[in-house]
Length: 113
Length: 114
Image (cartoon, rainbow over all chains, first blue to last red; front, side):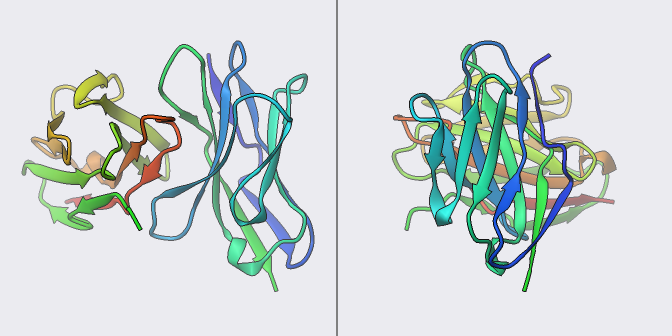
């Protein structure tokens, strides 16, 4: 079955430190990969996507994600976390034979001052 | 600043009542998605449309849920009759023709069925 896994329910990091939010996927072929962020009482916001090309993708708010085909991972990263980055982060994958996105269960990022 | 709008933002209703949620996609977007978010199930895709035509509604309980796009500026999701297990936040999202998966989400409708 096609799936997306976000193994950490919550990630805690101090402000100014680098952060990583993990995502792995189980989808055949070369899917499109996405990260979305959800702030409290808001809808999801698109952060970045990988379709092809450079394995390091840069997105909004200083976030980037690294695609690793051999490990089927697409981890979200940021060199220096801000308190305002605290939110719920969703990884998503679009298999090539469908228009639908498969979302992970989300990881809550908490950045402490 | 183009945004997806959803109404109502909050709805409390009694079991058995009809609920209608509305969504106005971003002008020019031709793909519309309906999602449901709960703590237990996470984010589930209910249905989606392209150019107003339904492409997939396999995630939707057919006996009580229905989704339509009367025109390009309005998408509706109806539940009749509503049940307590339908309590959730319902999101609408729209996508541009160049990449429908770069989805733009509305603020959601928080539905509580008592």
